[in-house]
Length: 472
Ligand code: FAD
Ligand code: NAI
Image (cartoon, rainbow, N blue to C red; front, side, top):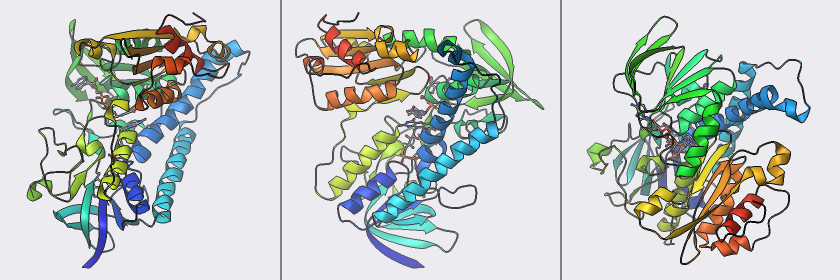
Protein backbone atom coordinates (compact mmCIF):
# COMPACT_ATOMS: atom_id res chain seq x y z
CA UNK A 1 0.00 0.00 0.00
CA UNK A 2 1.24 3.47 -0.86
CA UNK A 3 2.67 5.36 2.16
CA UNK A 4 3.25 9.15 2.19
CA UNK A 5 4.77 11.34 4.91
CA UNK A 6 3.52 14.77 5.99
CA UNK A 7 4.02 17.15 8.88
CA UNK A 8 0.23 17.37 9.28
CA UNK A 9 -2.77 15.39 8.06
CA UNK A 10 -6.07 17.23 8.35
CA UNK A 11 -9.16 14.99 8.19
CA UNK A 12 -12.10 16.92 6.73
CA UNK A 13 -12.14 19.76 4.19
CA UNK A 14 -15.01 21.77 5.67
CA UNK A 15 -14.39 25.38 6.75
CA UNK A 16 -12.45 24.15 9.79
CA UNK A 17 -10.30 21.60 7.95
CA UNK A 18 -9.45 23.32 4.67
CA UNK A 19 -8.63 26.61 6.39
CA UNK A 20 -6.40 24.76 8.88
CA UNK A 21 -4.63 22.94 6.02
CA UNK A 22 -4.02 26.18 4.09
CA UNK A 23 -2.73 28.03 7.17
CA UNK A 24 -0.41 25.08 8.01
CA UNK A 25 0.97 25.21 4.45
CA UNK A 26 1.40 29.00 4.64
CA UNK A 27 3.48 28.44 7.75
CA UNK A 28 5.79 26.04 5.92
CA UNK A 29 4.43 22.65 6.97
CA UNK A 30 3.84 19.80 4.52
CA UNK A 31 0.13 19.05 4.65
CA UNK A 32 -2.40 16.51 3.38
CA UNK A 33 -6.12 17.25 3.64
CA UNK A 34 -8.43 14.23 3.35
CA UNK A 35 -12.11 14.59 2.56
CA UNK A 36 -14.79 12.06 1.76
CA UNK A 37 -17.48 14.36 0.26
CA UNK A 38 -18.50 13.48 -3.31
CA UNK A 39 -20.78 15.35 -5.67
CA UNK A 40 -23.54 13.69 -7.70
CA UNK A 41 -20.91 12.50 -10.22
CA UNK A 42 -18.78 10.94 -7.48
CA UNK A 43 -16.19 13.67 -7.87
CA UNK A 44 -14.54 15.26 -4.81
CA UNK A 45 -16.45 18.23 -3.43
CA UNK A 46 -14.39 19.83 -0.64
CA UNK A 47 -16.01 22.52 1.49
CA UNK A 48 -17.86 20.25 3.91
CA UNK A 49 -21.38 20.78 5.15
CA UNK A 50 -20.96 24.54 4.80
CA UNK A 51 -20.42 24.65 1.04
CA UNK A 52 -22.27 21.50 -0.01
CA UNK A 53 -25.44 21.40 2.09
CA UNK A 54 -25.22 24.21 4.64
CA UNK A 55 -24.35 27.91 4.76
CA UNK A 56 -24.01 28.53 1.03
CA UNK A 57 -26.89 26.59 -0.58
CA UNK A 58 -29.27 27.73 2.18
CA UNK A 59 -28.32 31.37 1.61
CA UNK A 60 -28.68 30.94 -2.17
CA UNK A 61 -32.27 29.76 -1.68
CA UNK A 62 -32.94 32.41 0.97
CA UNK A 63 -31.81 35.08 -1.50
CA UNK A 64 -33.85 33.64 -4.40
CA UNK A 65 -36.97 33.31 -2.27
CA UNK A 66 -36.42 36.81 -0.87
CA UNK A 67 -36.44 38.25 -4.41
CA UNK A 68 -39.68 36.39 -5.16
CA UNK A 69 -41.23 37.58 -1.93
CA UNK A 70 -40.14 41.15 -2.69
CA UNK A 71 -41.74 41.04 -6.15
CA UNK A 72 -44.98 39.50 -4.96
CA UNK A 73 -45.45 41.36 -1.67
CA UNK A 74 -43.38 44.54 -1.50
CA UNK A 75 -42.47 45.79 -4.98
CA UNK A 76 -45.80 47.57 -5.47
CA UNK A 77 -45.00 50.21 -2.84
CA UNK A 78 -41.91 51.12 -4.88
CA UNK A 79 -44.18 51.67 -7.89
CA UNK A 80 -43.13 48.39 -9.46
CA UNK A 81 -45.83 46.04 -10.60
CA UNK A 82 -45.32 42.72 -12.28
CA UNK A 83 -47.91 41.26 -14.63
CA UNK A 84 -46.92 37.71 -13.83
CA UNK A 85 -44.46 36.40 -11.32
CA UNK A 86 -43.72 32.71 -11.59
CA UNK A 87 -41.34 30.43 -9.77
CA UNK A 88 -39.18 27.95 -11.65
CA UNK A 89 -37.96 25.72 -8.81
CA UNK A 90 -35.74 23.65 -11.09
CA UNK A 91 -33.91 26.81 -12.21
CA UNK A 92 -33.66 28.06 -8.64
CA UNK A 93 -32.04 24.78 -7.57
CA UNK A 94 -29.76 24.79 -10.62
CA UNK A 95 -28.55 28.27 -9.68
CA UNK A 96 -27.89 27.11 -6.12
CA UNK A 97 -26.04 24.00 -7.34
CA UNK A 98 -23.90 26.10 -9.68
CA UNK A 99 -22.88 28.36 -6.79
CA UNK A 100 -21.94 25.28 -4.74
CA UNK A 101 -19.93 23.87 -7.64
CA UNK A 102 -18.08 27.17 -8.19
CA UNK A 103 -17.15 27.44 -4.53
CA UNK A 104 -16.14 23.79 -4.02
CA UNK A 105 -13.99 24.04 -7.15
CA UNK A 106 -12.55 27.19 -5.62
CA UNK A 107 -11.55 25.29 -2.47
CA UNK A 108 -9.82 22.65 -4.60
CA UNK A 109 -7.93 25.49 -6.32
CA UNK A 110 -6.97 27.12 -3.02
CA UNK A 111 -5.61 23.84 -1.64
CA UNK A 112 -3.58 23.32 -4.82
CA UNK A 113 -2.29 26.90 -4.86
CA UNK A 114 -1.07 26.45 -1.28
CA UNK A 115 0.55 23.08 -2.11
CA UNK A 116 -1.75 21.10 0.17
CA UNK A 117 -2.04 17.48 -1.00
CA UNK A 118 -5.77 16.79 -1.32
CA UNK A 119 -6.84 13.17 -0.87
CA UNK A 120 -10.40 12.11 -1.72
CA UNK A 121 -11.36 9.20 0.52
CA UNK A 122 -12.52 8.02 3.91
CA UNK A 123 -9.98 8.39 6.70
CA UNK A 124 -9.57 6.25 9.77
CA UNK A 125 -6.91 6.88 12.38
CA UNK A 126 -4.76 3.81 13.08
CA UNK A 127 -2.38 5.44 15.56
CA UNK A 128 -1.23 8.89 16.66
CA UNK A 129 0.92 8.99 13.53
CA UNK A 130 -0.95 6.96 10.94
CA UNK A 131 -4.11 7.61 8.94
CA UNK A 132 -5.55 4.95 6.64
CA UNK A 133 -7.48 6.20 3.60
CA UNK A 134 -10.08 4.08 1.83
CA UNK A 135 -10.20 5.31 -1.77
CA UNK A 136 -11.84 4.22 -4.99
CA UNK A 137 -8.46 3.95 -6.75
CA UNK A 138 -6.55 2.05 -4.05
CA UNK A 139 -6.10 2.56 -0.34
CA UNK A 140 -3.32 4.68 1.04
CA UNK A 141 -1.54 5.33 4.34
CA UNK A 142 -0.58 8.84 5.42
CA UNK A 143 2.09 9.15 8.09
CA UNK A 144 2.11 12.43 10.00
CA UNK A 145 3.69 14.20 12.95
CA UNK A 146 0.29 15.71 13.81
CA UNK A 147 -3.29 14.79 12.92
CA UNK A 148 -6.16 17.31 12.99
CA UNK A 149 -9.70 15.92 13.17
CA UNK A 150 -12.16 18.28 11.43
CA UNK A 151 -14.91 15.86 10.47
CA UNK A 152 -17.82 18.15 11.32
CA UNK A 153 -21.34 17.26 12.28
CA UNK A 154 -24.50 15.60 11.00
CA UNK A 155 -28.20 16.04 11.76
CA UNK A 156 -29.50 14.68 15.06
CA UNK A 157 -32.29 12.21 14.47
CA UNK A 158 -35.45 11.68 16.50
CA UNK A 159 -35.31 8.12 17.84
CA UNK A 160 -38.74 7.06 16.61
CA UNK A 161 -38.46 8.68 13.17
CA UNK A 162 -36.45 7.48 10.24
CA UNK A 163 -35.51 10.11 7.69
CA UNK A 164 -36.25 8.84 4.15
CA UNK A 165 -35.33 12.16 2.44
CA UNK A 166 -38.68 12.10 0.62
CA UNK A 167 -41.53 12.52 3.08
CA UNK A 168 -39.41 12.84 6.22
CA UNK A 169 -36.36 14.94 5.48
CA UNK A 170 -33.34 16.63 7.04
CA UNK A 171 -31.82 19.99 6.08
CA UNK A 172 -29.93 18.55 3.09
CA UNK A 173 -33.14 17.33 1.42
CA UNK A 174 -34.91 20.58 2.41
CA UNK A 175 -32.45 22.30 0.03
CA UNK A 176 -33.44 19.95 -2.81
CA UNK A 177 -37.27 19.90 -2.80
CA UNK A 178 -38.33 19.64 -6.42
CA UNK A 179 -41.57 21.53 -5.85
CA UNK A 180 -43.05 23.81 -3.24
CA UNK A 181 -44.79 21.60 -0.68
CA UNK A 182 -48.44 22.45 -0.02
CA UNK A 183 -47.84 22.11 3.72
CA UNK A 184 -44.35 21.72 5.21
CA UNK A 185 -44.10 20.53 8.81
CA UNK A 186 -40.90 21.32 10.72
CA UNK A 187 -39.74 19.86 14.03
CA UNK A 188 -37.57 22.46 15.80
CA UNK A 189 -37.76 26.28 15.65
CA UNK A 190 -33.97 26.64 15.73
CA UNK A 191 -31.72 28.20 13.12
CA UNK A 192 -32.30 25.59 10.40
CA UNK A 193 -36.04 25.38 11.10
CA UNK A 194 -36.48 29.15 10.75
CA UNK A 195 -34.25 29.53 7.68
CA UNK A 196 -35.89 26.64 5.80
CA UNK A 197 -39.37 27.78 6.88
CA UNK A 198 -38.49 31.23 5.48
CA UNK A 199 -37.47 29.79 2.10
CA UNK A 200 -40.46 27.55 1.53
CA UNK A 201 -43.11 29.83 3.04
CA UNK A 202 -41.90 32.74 0.86
CA UNK A 203 -42.33 30.44 -2.13
CA UNK A 204 -45.90 29.64 -1.12
CA UNK A 205 -45.86 26.69 1.28
CA UNK A 206 -47.96 26.68 4.38
CA UNK A 207 -45.47 25.99 7.19
CA UNK A 208 -46.08 24.69 10.71
CA UNK A 209 -43.16 24.43 13.15
CA UNK A 210 -43.36 22.43 16.37
CA UNK A 211 -40.87 23.54 19.02
CA UNK A 212 -40.34 21.65 22.28
CA UNK A 213 -39.24 24.75 24.27
CA UNK A 214 -41.83 27.16 25.66
CA UNK A 215 -39.97 30.25 24.38
CA UNK A 216 -39.33 31.49 20.84
CA UNK A 217 -35.57 31.90 20.20
CA UNK A 218 -34.48 31.38 23.83
CA UNK A 219 -30.79 31.88 22.92
CA UNK A 220 -31.49 35.38 21.57
CA UNK A 221 -31.64 38.61 23.63
CA UNK A 222 -35.15 39.02 25.01
CA UNK A 223 -35.85 42.35 23.27
CA UNK A 224 -34.81 40.92 19.91
CA UNK A 225 -36.78 37.70 20.51
CA UNK A 226 -39.86 39.80 21.36
CA UNK A 227 -39.58 41.73 18.10
CA UNK A 228 -38.77 38.55 16.17
CA UNK A 229 -41.88 36.81 17.38
CA UNK A 230 -43.95 39.85 16.31
CA UNK A 231 -42.31 40.44 12.92
CA UNK A 232 -41.21 37.00 11.74
CA UNK A 233 -44.23 35.13 12.98
CA UNK A 234 -46.52 37.48 11.06
CA UNK A 235 -44.87 36.33 7.81
CA UNK A 236 -47.02 33.29 7.28
CA UNK A 237 -45.53 30.46 9.25
CA UNK A 238 -47.02 29.10 12.38
CA UNK A 239 -44.68 28.29 15.28
CA UNK A 240 -46.27 26.15 18.01
CA UNK A 241 -44.21 26.34 21.18
CA UNK A 242 -44.22 23.76 23.97
CA UNK A 243 -45.08 21.13 21.38
CA UNK A 244 -43.66 17.63 21.35
CA UNK A 245 -44.09 15.40 18.33
CA UNK A 246 -45.35 12.07 19.70
CA UNK A 247 -45.85 10.01 16.57
CA UNK A 248 -45.52 10.29 12.82
CA UNK A 249 -47.38 8.15 10.30
CA UNK A 250 -46.36 8.09 6.66
CA UNK A 251 -49.37 7.94 4.34
CA UNK A 252 -49.18 7.43 0.58
CA UNK A 253 -48.92 11.16 -0.19
CA UNK A 254 -48.79 12.83 3.20
CA UNK A 255 -47.49 12.54 6.72
CA UNK A 256 -49.69 12.64 9.82
CA UNK A 257 -47.97 14.28 12.76
CA UNK A 258 -49.33 13.76 16.29
CA UNK A 259 -48.25 16.53 18.63
CA UNK A 260 -48.67 16.99 22.37
CA UNK A 261 -49.01 20.74 22.89
CA UNK A 262 -50.14 23.14 25.59
CA UNK A 263 -53.75 22.38 24.69
CA UNK A 264 -53.46 18.61 24.53
CA UNK A 265 -52.89 16.22 21.67
CA UNK A 266 -53.59 17.19 18.05
CA UNK A 267 -52.97 15.76 14.61
CA UNK A 268 -51.80 17.65 11.52
CA UNK A 269 -51.41 16.35 8.01
CA UNK A 270 -48.42 17.73 6.10
CA UNK A 271 -46.92 16.91 2.70
CA UNK A 272 -43.41 16.71 4.02
CA UNK A 273 -41.81 16.81 7.48
CA UNK A 274 -38.41 18.42 8.14
CA UNK A 275 -36.53 17.28 11.25
CA UNK A 276 -34.27 20.14 12.46
CA UNK A 277 -33.60 19.46 16.13
CA UNK A 278 -29.85 20.06 16.24
CA UNK A 279 -26.64 18.44 15.02
CA UNK A 280 -24.23 15.90 16.50
CA UNK A 281 -20.51 15.20 16.02
CA UNK A 282 -19.57 13.21 12.93
CA UNK A 283 -16.96 10.69 14.03
CA UNK A 284 -18.10 7.74 11.91
CA UNK A 285 -15.29 5.69 10.35
CA UNK A 286 -12.53 7.40 12.33
CA UNK A 287 -11.96 4.50 14.71
CA UNK A 288 -11.86 6.75 17.77
CA UNK A 289 -12.95 4.18 20.33
CA UNK A 290 -10.24 1.71 19.24
CA UNK A 291 -7.74 4.54 19.67
CA UNK A 292 -9.14 5.48 23.10
CA UNK A 293 -9.71 9.08 22.03
CA UNK A 294 -11.93 10.86 24.58
CA UNK A 295 -15.42 11.96 23.52
CA UNK A 296 -18.05 13.56 25.77
CA UNK A 297 -21.44 12.00 26.55
CA UNK A 298 -22.88 13.54 23.33
CA UNK A 299 -20.05 12.21 21.15
CA UNK A 300 -18.15 15.49 20.70
CA UNK A 301 -14.36 15.08 20.70
CA UNK A 302 -12.91 16.45 23.94
CA UNK A 303 -10.10 19.00 23.57
CA UNK A 304 -8.14 21.32 25.86
CA UNK A 305 -7.61 25.06 25.34
CA UNK A 306 -5.05 24.32 22.59
CA UNK A 307 -7.44 21.91 20.77
CA UNK A 308 -5.33 18.93 21.86
CA UNK A 309 -7.19 15.67 22.39
CA UNK A 310 -6.15 13.20 25.08
CA UNK A 311 -3.80 11.56 22.55
CA UNK A 312 -0.51 13.37 22.00
CA UNK A 313 -0.26 14.72 18.45
CA UNK A 314 -3.99 14.51 17.66
CA UNK A 315 -5.99 17.75 17.59
CA UNK A 316 -9.67 18.47 16.84
CA UNK A 317 -11.49 21.59 15.59
CA UNK A 318 -14.85 22.75 14.22
CA UNK A 319 -18.28 21.20 14.73
CA UNK A 320 -16.79 17.87 15.85
CA UNK A 321 -15.75 19.50 19.16
CA UNK A 322 -19.15 21.17 19.69
CA UNK A 323 -19.69 24.69 21.05
CA UNK A 324 -21.01 27.16 18.49
CA UNK A 325 -21.50 25.01 15.39
CA UNK A 326 -20.60 27.78 12.97
CA UNK A 327 -18.34 27.85 9.93
CA UNK A 328 -16.37 30.91 11.03
CA UNK A 329 -15.77 29.45 14.51
CA UNK A 330 -14.32 26.28 12.94
CA UNK A 331 -12.13 28.28 10.56
CA UNK A 332 -10.68 30.36 13.38
CA UNK A 333 -9.90 27.18 15.32
CA UNK A 334 -8.20 25.86 12.17
CA UNK A 335 -5.96 28.93 11.96
CA UNK A 336 -5.21 28.79 15.68
CA UNK A 337 -4.18 25.11 15.59
CA UNK A 338 -1.90 25.74 12.60
CA UNK A 339 -0.25 28.54 14.57
CA UNK A 340 0.06 26.35 17.69
CA UNK A 341 1.74 23.67 15.56
CA UNK A 342 4.38 26.18 14.47
CA UNK A 343 5.05 27.42 18.00
CA UNK A 344 3.00 30.58 17.65
CA UNK A 345 0.17 31.75 19.89
CA UNK A 346 -2.96 30.72 17.97
CA UNK A 347 -5.99 31.87 19.89
CA UNK A 348 -9.78 32.10 19.44
CA UNK A 349 -11.78 34.72 21.29
CA UNK A 350 -15.00 32.77 21.87
CA UNK A 351 -16.60 35.91 23.35
CA UNK A 352 -16.40 37.65 19.97
CA UNK A 353 -18.09 35.14 17.68
CA UNK A 354 -21.00 36.57 15.70
CA UNK A 355 -24.25 34.62 15.34
CA UNK A 356 -26.57 35.32 12.43
CA UNK A 357 -30.00 33.94 11.62
CA UNK A 358 -30.87 34.68 7.99
CA UNK A 359 -34.59 35.26 8.37
CA UNK A 360 -35.97 38.54 7.08
CA UNK A 361 -35.35 40.77 8.84
CA UNK A 362 -32.09 39.15 9.82
CA UNK A 363 -31.11 38.54 13.43
CA UNK A 364 -27.48 38.93 14.50
CA UNK A 365 -25.64 39.23 17.75
CA UNK A 366 -22.25 39.10 19.41
CA UNK A 367 -21.65 38.78 23.15
CA UNK A 368 -23.97 37.91 26.00
CA UNK A 369 -27.70 38.51 26.06
CA UNK A 370 -29.11 40.93 28.63
CA UNK A 371 -30.66 37.98 30.50
CA UNK A 372 -27.23 36.27 30.76
CA UNK A 373 -25.62 39.48 32.09
CA UNK A 374 -28.33 39.64 34.75
CA UNK A 375 -27.61 36.04 35.78
CA UNK A 376 -23.89 36.94 35.96
CA UNK A 377 -24.65 40.04 38.08
CA UNK A 378 -22.90 42.37 35.63
CA UNK A 379 -23.51 46.10 36.10
CA UNK A 380 -24.51 47.14 32.60
CA UNK A 381 -26.29 49.87 30.63
CA UNK A 382 -28.27 49.55 27.39
CA UNK A 383 -28.85 51.78 24.38
CA UNK A 384 -31.00 51.07 21.36
CA UNK A 385 -32.13 52.52 18.08
CA UNK A 386 -35.05 51.51 15.83
CA UNK A 387 -34.62 51.14 12.07
CA UNK A 388 -37.81 53.12 11.60
CA UNK A 389 -35.88 56.29 12.54
CA UNK A 390 -33.15 55.75 9.94
CA UNK A 391 -33.30 57.59 6.62
CA UNK A 392 -31.67 54.75 4.70
CA UNK A 393 -34.06 52.14 6.15
CA UNK A 394 -36.99 54.39 5.14
CA UNK A 395 -35.57 54.76 1.63
CA UNK A 396 -35.24 50.99 1.36
CA UNK A 397 -38.68 50.35 2.81
CA UNK A 398 -37.16 48.07 5.47
CA UNK A 399 -37.97 49.78 8.73
CA UNK A 400 -38.71 46.85 11.02
CA UNK A 401 -36.37 45.98 13.85
CA UNK A 402 -33.79 47.63 16.08
CA UNK A 403 -30.20 47.68 17.24
CA UNK A 404 -29.39 47.20 20.93
CA UNK A 405 -26.02 47.89 22.53
CA UNK A 406 -25.01 46.73 26.00
CA UNK A 407 -21.97 48.24 27.72
CA UNK A 408 -20.36 47.89 31.13
CA UNK A 409 -21.92 50.56 33.36
CA UNK A 410 -18.62 51.29 35.09
CA UNK A 411 -15.99 51.03 32.36
CA UNK A 412 -18.17 51.86 29.31
CA UNK A 413 -16.61 48.84 27.53
CA UNK A 414 -18.91 47.35 24.91
CA UNK A 415 -20.19 43.94 26.08
CA UNK A 416 -22.64 42.88 23.40
CA UNK A 417 -24.70 44.00 20.41
CA UNK A 418 -28.05 42.53 19.33
CA UNK A 419 -29.70 43.38 16.03
CA UNK A 420 -32.91 42.48 14.27
CA UNK A 421 -33.23 44.30 11.01
CA UNK A 422 -32.18 44.64 7.38
CA UNK A 423 -28.56 43.57 6.74
CA UNK A 424 -28.01 42.68 10.39
CA UNK A 425 -25.57 40.06 9.07
CA UNK A 426 -23.32 42.82 7.71
CA UNK A 427 -23.87 45.39 10.48
CA UNK A 428 -22.76 42.98 13.21
CA UNK A 429 -19.18 42.99 11.83
CA UNK A 430 -18.61 46.48 13.28
CA UNK A 431 -19.70 45.24 16.71
CA UNK A 432 -17.37 42.23 16.45
CA UNK A 433 -14.41 44.50 15.68
CA UNK A 434 -15.37 46.72 18.62
CA UNK A 435 -15.64 43.82 21.07
CA UNK A 436 -12.47 42.12 19.78
CA UNK A 437 -10.64 45.45 20.16
CA UNK A 438 -12.16 46.08 23.61
CA UNK A 439 -13.60 49.43 22.49
CA UNK A 440 -15.86 51.51 24.69
CA UNK A 441 -19.28 52.82 23.72
CA UNK A 442 -17.69 56.28 23.61
CA UNK A 443 -15.22 55.05 20.96
CA UNK A 444 -18.13 54.05 18.72
CA UNK A 445 -20.10 57.18 19.54
CA UNK A 446 -17.09 59.19 18.35
CA UNK A 447 -16.77 57.21 15.11
CA UNK A 448 -18.20 58.92 12.03
CA UNK A 449 -20.61 56.75 10.04
CA UNK A 450 -21.59 57.52 6.44
CA UNK A 451 -24.98 59.00 5.67
CA UNK A 452 -27.46 57.65 4.73
CA UNK A 453 -26.54 54.14 5.82
CA UNK A 454 -27.98 51.45 8.03
CA UNK A 455 -24.70 51.64 9.98
CA UNK A 456 -25.84 55.02 11.32
CA UNK A 457 -28.12 52.92 13.53
CA UNK A 458 -25.00 51.46 15.17
CA UNK A 459 -23.75 55.00 15.86
CA UNK A 460 -27.10 56.09 17.29
CA UNK A 461 -27.41 52.99 19.51
CA UNK A 462 -23.91 53.71 20.86
CA UNK A 463 -24.93 57.34 21.51
CA UNK A 464 -28.11 56.13 23.21
CA UNK A 465 -26.04 54.31 25.86
CA UNK A 466 -25.41 57.78 27.29
CA UNK A 467 -28.83 59.17 26.41
CA UNK A 468 -27.31 61.09 23.47
CA UNK A 469 -29.11 59.61 20.44
CA UNK A 470 -29.93 62.44 18.06
CA UNK A 471 -32.59 61.00 15.78
CA UNK A 472 -34.94 59.24 18.22
P1 FAD B 1 -18.05 20.19 8.04
O1 FAD B 1 -18.33 21.38 7.25
O2 FAD B 1 -19.18 19.29 8.41
O3 FAD B 1 -16.95 19.37 7.23
C1 FAD B 1 -16.48 18.13 7.65
C2 FAD B 1 -15.90 17.39 6.45
O4 FAD B 1 -15.26 16.22 6.92
C3 FAD B 1 -16.96 16.93 5.44
O5 FAD B 1 -16.58 17.31 4.14
C4 FAD B 1 -16.96 15.41 5.57
O6 FAD B 1 -17.22 14.74 4.35
C5 FAD B 1 -15.53 15.16 6.01
N1 FAD B 1 -15.37 13.89 6.73
C6 FAD B 1 -16.07 13.42 7.78
N2 FAD B 1 -15.59 12.22 8.18
C7 FAD B 1 -14.57 11.93 7.35
C8 FAD B 1 -13.68 10.83 7.24
N3 FAD B 1 -13.72 9.82 8.10
N4 FAD B 1 -12.77 10.86 6.25
C9 FAD B 1 -12.69 11.90 5.38
N5 FAD B 1 -13.50 12.97 5.44
C10 FAD B 1 -14.42 12.98 6.42
N6 FAD B 1 -22.82 28.05 9.77
C11 FAD B 1 -22.56 29.37 9.62
O7 FAD B 1 -21.59 29.88 10.19
N7 FAD B 1 -23.38 30.17 8.86
C12 FAD B 1 -24.46 29.67 8.22
O8 FAD B 1 -25.17 30.42 7.53
C13 FAD B 1 -24.75 28.29 8.34
N8 FAD B 1 -25.80 27.75 7.70
C14 FAD B 1 -26.02 26.41 7.79
C15 FAD B 1 -27.12 25.87 7.14
C16 FAD B 1 -27.39 24.52 7.22
C17 FAD B 1 -28.58 23.96 6.49
C18 FAD B 1 -26.52 23.68 7.97
C19 FAD B 1 -26.77 22.21 8.04
C20 FAD B 1 -25.43 24.20 8.63
C21 FAD B 1 -25.18 25.57 8.57
N9 FAD B 1 -24.11 26.16 9.23
C22 FAD B 1 -23.87 27.49 9.14
C23 FAD B 1 -23.18 25.36 10.05
C24 FAD B 1 -21.89 25.07 9.27
O9 FAD B 1 -22.21 24.42 8.06
C25 FAD B 1 -20.97 24.22 10.11
O10 FAD B 1 -20.74 24.86 11.35
C26 FAD B 1 -19.63 24.03 9.42
O11 FAD B 1 -19.79 23.44 8.15
C27 FAD B 1 -18.71 23.16 10.28
O12 FAD B 1 -17.47 23.07 9.64
P2 FAD B 1 -16.50 21.83 9.90
O13 FAD B 1 -15.35 22.04 9.00
O14 FAD B 1 -16.29 21.64 11.34
O15 FAD B 1 -17.33 20.53 9.42
P1 NAI C 1 -30.76 24.34 16.80
O1 NAI C 1 -30.08 23.86 18.01
O2 NAI C 1 -30.51 25.72 16.32
O3 NAI C 1 -32.33 24.22 16.97
C1 NAI C 1 -32.96 23.02 17.27
C2 NAI C 1 -34.32 23.35 17.86
O4 NAI C 1 -35.06 22.15 17.95
C3 NAI C 1 -34.24 23.94 19.26
O5 NAI C 1 -35.04 25.09 19.33
C4 NAI C 1 -34.76 22.81 20.14
O6 NAI C 1 -35.42 23.28 21.30
C5 NAI C 1 -35.71 22.12 19.19
N1 NAI C 1 -35.97 20.71 19.51
C6 NAI C 1 -35.07 19.78 19.91
N2 NAI C 1 -35.69 18.58 20.07
C7 NAI C 1 -36.98 18.78 19.73
C8 NAI C 1 -38.12 17.93 19.67
N3 NAI C 1 -38.04 16.63 19.97
N4 NAI C 1 -39.32 18.46 19.28
C9 NAI C 1 -39.40 19.79 18.96
N5 NAI C 1 -38.36 20.63 19.01
C10 NAI C 1 -37.17 20.13 19.38
O7 NAI C 1 -30.42 23.25 15.68
P2 NAI C 1 -30.65 23.27 14.11
O8 NAI C 1 -31.66 24.27 13.73
O9 NAI C 1 -30.83 21.85 13.74
O10 NAI C 1 -29.25 23.75 13.59
C11 NAI C 1 -28.06 23.07 13.97
C12 NAI C 1 -26.90 24.01 14.01
O11 NAI C 1 -26.49 24.34 12.70
C13 NAI C 1 -27.20 25.36 14.65
O12 NAI C 1 -27.12 25.31 16.05
C14 NAI C 1 -26.12 26.22 14.09
O13 NAI C 1 -24.97 26.04 14.85
C15 NAI C 1 -25.92 25.64 12.70
N6 NAI C 1 -26.61 26.50 11.73
C16 NAI C 1 -26.22 27.81 11.65
C17 NAI C 1 -26.86 28.66 10.78
C18 NAI C 1 -26.46 30.09 10.76
O14 NAI C 1 -25.41 30.41 11.29
N7 NAI C 1 -27.24 30.98 10.17
C19 NAI C 1 -27.92 28.20 9.89
C20 NAI C 1 -28.27 26.82 10.08
C21 NAI C 1 -27.60 26.01 10.96
